[in-house]
Length: 389
Image (cartoon, rainbow, N blue to C red; front, side, top):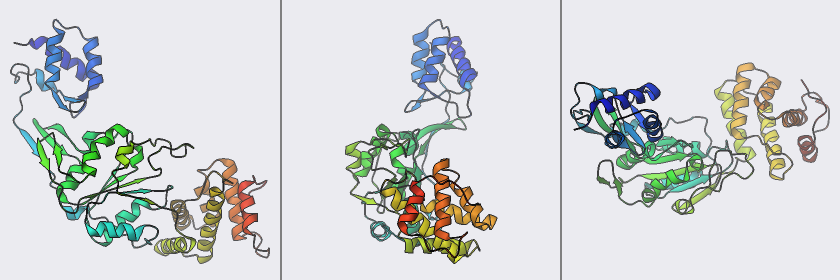
């Protein structure tokens, strides 16, 4: 029979060092406490701890495990429950954006989503050009439920597939977004997938094949319901970011990437489409200014072309134009809106962008001839000597 004193000493030390509401601890925490606490019989404590494992790399050890309700030093659990998703699929339908203007790969993605076939698609492209939004708005248009998950370096298999947790004295299995989407038969959007760890994402490989999935926490085979599909968005193609612009992105496993049937390259919208987007936003925010809208779009277009040719490292995204329109709706001042929304760039780039905007809009010299594209490009490449107010 186990020694209650050893177990009690370990559990109290663990909670004193790493106490949390979920009573969940990782192996590193356990090892550290194990090494710094003296026991009469370490192997006894070690074996007891292994029995408390609740998931990959996690252990549930409440203080109650040393209370009078404990028999043989094992936590008394009323029952083990399976917490399947009780979500109403209709509540997962994205909200339709009345200002959204379809462009780029919208029609092709719409064809895939409305077919309801399992056809995984990878959407890549520069930041702020509507990769995720297009998928959301397609689902909103057709009233199709969607689960969107943003990945990062800390995302693990438990968060994606499912985990065990302790709730009111019961160990419950909480299903992750991947399993929920499979059961409901709805699309799953893995946003910023290249920010996820390559090893973690390997748990998705059998799911990306569209085959039945073995859910080990329940010892159950899950057959994806009709309509289930996986979409992934990323700023890279899973090869990492060589220039450091998208820091935090990872090189993904080639076998993982190969499981996506198609890859779409999403570019920024054309000037005509972007003008519609900007004007729609201005109408929505009640700050209509057609001349300002046209200037913004031309300004962004010239900067992007200069960026593509290597003349400048930064660019103006569609999202940045949205920020500028919103700033204009708040401050009612064009110059201030441009200044505030270009402050994120380094000083040389910021001054060049502001100087370029003045040249494109001719705000200060309305009688001056309209600058040529080459003159505008030079304003971006060369550091300006002065900045207009």
